[in-house]
Image (tube, rainbow over all chains, first blue to last red; front, side, top):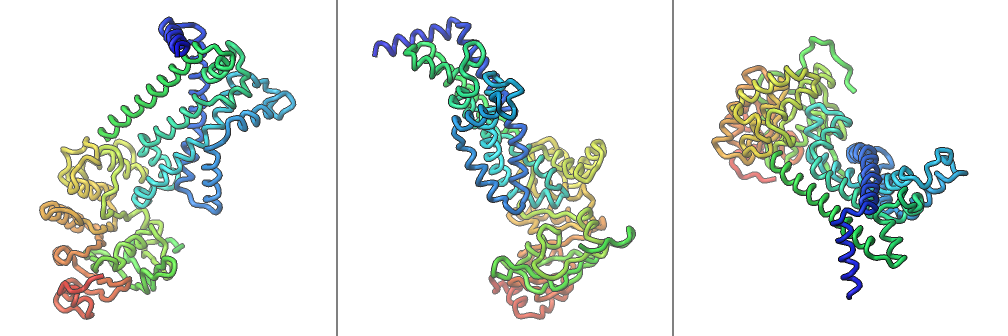
Length: 233
Length: 244
């Protein structure tokens, strides 16, 4: 057990000492996953809301596909984005492969279905409760969708957090499209995977601890915010 | 879609012509035919499961009938803009009491400043002035019912549908709500409401539509209905011997 203790001690030393490499990796991870979350929210929230209240032929099929996409394997997404962005691919001319932007794209693809599917379920439930009243007051479908997104904002925090959790903890897709290049595309999960393979556990454990603390801080803050806001509204 | 009438045409009467509603193989409303004109408070009365709420929702255009025609003298589009429904359980948004009213007014295209002043008037009329800033969902049951009515009142509807407006309220809150409804009637709003409460129907109704098992069995003035009901089901209902 001694080596685990040594690794833990070294990890804490890196965190407390403010190791610059560690800081750079954490900052890039947050930038990539934060951007992916922003993109997926801009797409997933309105799409999920509309799917929750609009009825059309084939809607059930769309819902099934969307729910299935929640379980998209990251390596498959990584492979798909790699093919798109590689030089002979349709978007190869953009030169995005092995950049943080490629990782943002991969993570956005991965978590947009999560945000959209959870939003769809939330808004559909809310529409059951509010729908007839909104229609009786004269709200159309688009206005109803916007109103319900606002009404369900605290519940939707969970959907957004689920997306962020998936993005920040994901390793397969970003490894493929980012290449885990030091000081360029190296983020927490890819560093943990690399250092574990190399048997260098201190940085891996330090990053693991930070990853857990980050998740705890974000989920905890959201839960507190939701509780306070719920009581006030 | 009903052709639109000239602008000065009165919105009422509302006509049901052989209106039916089926859910899968079950008939929930059968061959409803009646006409409701401006003026009297029309109360749709009947035991639970009679189809009262369903008829009200069809009248408000929330549900399309399976058969028959619902028509308004002033046209369907105007009816959508000039009528509103207050549900049995008030559906209020997660915002302040005042903001709930302002939201409904903004949906009708009203300017923000006018929304504020009309909301204040509506809150005052229902005795809710001091609760305007309070989150709607933190109001008591009676206050929520009054807020829903205030929201409807602010829209100045020609026709106001009320679904079991005092269900689950205590006698004091019921009386306060009924006074507000009577005030609306006196101000010229046509009230069409459902209830299974005989005493409330006696207090509120000018005319009664008696429903049982999805059928309209009697349509008469309140005086005639309570004094001399024609059908056996109505007699049993007044004797409190009729169940769904």
